Length: 309
Image 1 (cartoon, rainbow, N blue to C red):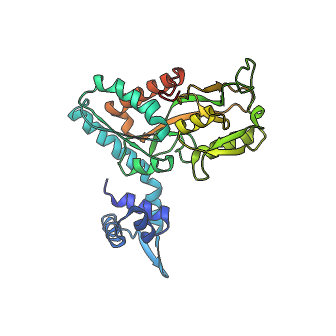
Image 2 (cartoon, helix red, strand yellow):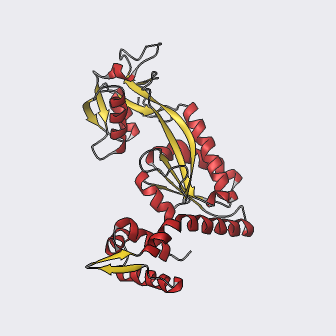
Image 3 (tube, rainbow, N blue to C red):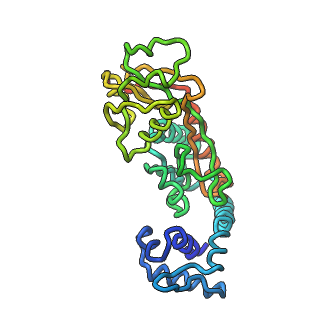
């Protein structure tokens, strides 16, 4: 598909040619020329000047509405051609939130290499908010992210979204903590008097913990701040507070996981998104299956962090 359509979508999303150019890092006049060329091909105007602003015409808005379906059809055609050429050869670009690189992507890659030696993966770390843009810009084939405000809905016309796994989120406490030896159901609210290890204000993990604690009826007392799982686990093991940690995350040997119960017991769903139509390609479908198998294994096999005794 001509890249004028994605450019037109960007103009609609960001509110103008100049704004789209700033976000995309492209020249505004170059964007305008491509859109004007598309307008000439279609025989209808797509941009019109109103005062100092350039706005989309009704025809342009209709094209933007139809664009996701056009992209999906284009993607399916690309995948059909690739499979016809050689279904077992090609690079798979996997973009992942940091939490899943060590726990899902690398174990999946270990499973992948013997079965698909001619199809290497290229892995990059991304924030969830970047995922849809990387897919749309063909900079990634698969994006792994936690379900949240930045994930496309299941019925999104441009992206295919698959649940890899839903994992419990545990309370982690230092050894000797009153909750560490409990054998009955523990509620998250029972940790409301403890100091908490939270992420910094701009980090996603902080908001996740605050939301879970709010559901349990309290606001956690902020003790220390860390985002990286290793740092969080080490601070908890040192007796500086408690925190929440997804089941697949490794923990310091001095940490005790406390399984949470009740209506407010937290859980997290891990998703894999791809361009709709691309999942029909044998290579992408196999990569998604491999990631799902690794994700399920990560939840059931707990590995302590090493070298931290």
